[in-house]
Image (tube, rainbow, N blue to C red; front, side):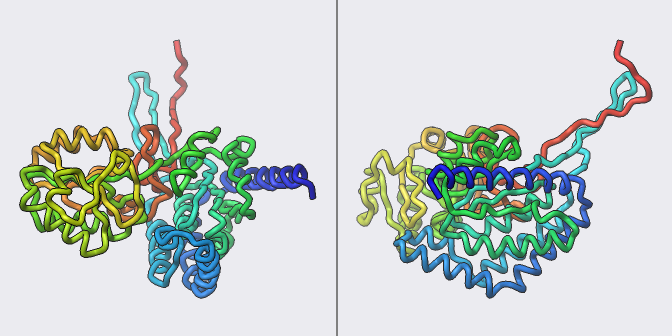
Length: 426
């Protein structure tokens, strides 16, 4: 087959996925809450029943990735274990039990002329999810879209292809048993990167929203090329600020968790800012705890003077999402300096303040314009599951429609229902 013929075949395949997804979306939009719950609970059961098959598929993906010399952070995101499969199952079940958003009345009011107006949640339609290494995205995205009445087209990375396929098969079992079209959840059947380009064009108007989950290169391409709306964050350049009022034990425990619990996730801390007034008391214990866990420290001159093992931070370090056991550390003279640094360098994903001063916390919350702001807790709580959403399809840092974790409610729009008794407009 010639290159032109191959390209045409791919375009045709993707167009068919889009048409099928639109049909699935129409059926799913009017599905009953019980149908959707049945589909998800059955899918969760199937994931558990086919655990060995999923782990075997993931082992195949892991072996291929290791042979390519993929980074440790990437392998961590790709790997499935029994515990992670338990987490996937629990997330799907949690989403299944969430209140059904479709058809719920957001607001209602009466006009002087007697018209009764309701604003009602409605599905977006067809969601295109483009992701790289995390197989759990397959289940999270599928479950969230089913619950919110949206069909989904999943395009996973080549590195997670076998894992994603095994999980999708379980999702399809759920749809089938619930009497819903299996086209509601579709996995792009090729690893050809040209499939991404077809999705970004919108598949002849059949994709309503694109959600990218992956590295900066992928997200930047999606944001640059997409002809449909995008829910995304470009990177997670996350800050933790230690205020002069911070409790030392909290500062140590929270910073350690925010950086080192899982270094490869978007909620992991990348920059630590420490108020100069607690330099002598707080910096050493925090840094010692990080170094003990294998974290590399890159600091400004004040940090270099205080910490013998620190390496000099460059301008680029304040702009870097390491996704690794590395953290940039800076001493600031005031809360205002911390806010100014964050506003200059942040990707507006998540920022944390460790403080006992309520006024400082309120100022931080009011003046920092990031999607998620955290007080006296780890930035690694920046996650839809931890927010009680059951899971998330991604985190968005834009200011239109969805911001922060994108869960079931964020995957709906609304329409107005206007009820009258014969009114005409003069």
